[in-house]
Length: 468
Image (cartoon, rainbow, N blue to C red; front, top):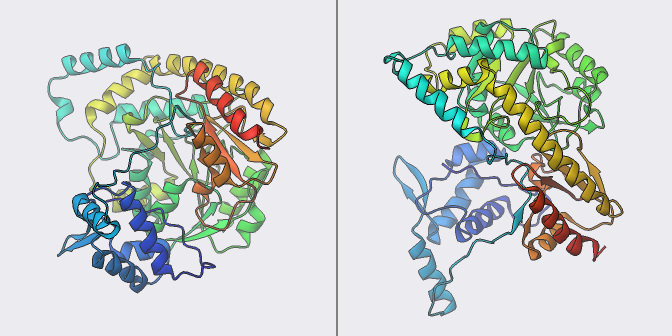
């Protein structure tokens, strides 16, 4: 089922159902919603958008009346066949040929979500996989622990202590297939009627996940130190979702003073917690690594979530969560019956990869590669400083550039498209839809070669700086 990233504008003269209708229609005609793809139910979409269900129903009914959607009893709403849609377009415009929508082609893409897979240790991973299967006598094909393999959890606990300063027992660790699954578990553990505090801009998928749980979401303003605790204290939120080591997408690193304030906020009431998303802490290019917030958690208030997707590869799909001791009992009572979502074979391979030092060597190699790309990109971006403010440097896998000359995000993206360069706007992370100030763009560099970085930025320089 496709997740619809609809941003409604209450100031728009068009009714809300018209905005939903036009968005879905354009997604279908643009090929982003595929034939036969299931849409969210009217109830779930209304809950996500925080509007009445009847508004969503009006939009769906209009789309069905025009042939864009069909309703299947007891199954939901689905996108109609493309042939039927093209036939309607041809009839209405009296054209003899179908209009085929061709995806835009880019020579360079500065994706903030990509990683470098050219340097993945394929030979090592293959050898460990082969040895694991040869040495096993069927044990890994049986059902394992719901929390994850004991050996892997012990290895993760040692890794967290040595690299992030987090002291925890292996019994506090839960292994799952991606952060999405861990957040779903957390929903069961924390229970309903929660109020989640989130920065804006922030990680959109986490926002959508919390919305789908029916949680109330509260926007908390940020400053140069991250989430403002004075605003948090003035809200009714009881859980704060933060990325203190490298906020996404702004790149802000939360200093120790602000971290202390945040921990004191959580300690002030029994049922308050902090969710720390430590998604790419391995990559810092200046000074020492920033310790995890969890490392300073003396009162068991921080729920720590980490992943191997950035450090190794997205397809690994292995993330982990460290639960505070009070919530561990809640997990055992409410979630112990659930099976692990990660293959025991994959867990065993990852365990050997970390335990035998391959992971550390891979990280050291990737830090060097990413640092070289980072430094090259920072050097080339100095040419843009008259028109753009460069932010988010020295850590992570992307830069944030803010336009100084008044051009809109849309203008900048369209100018880049003319040069066949794909860039990403900050507005995609404005989950509350309240605006984020000046036009800003994210420029990722992880999966680009040095030559591609130079050529891509040269193209952007021609279209952005020649018009400024």
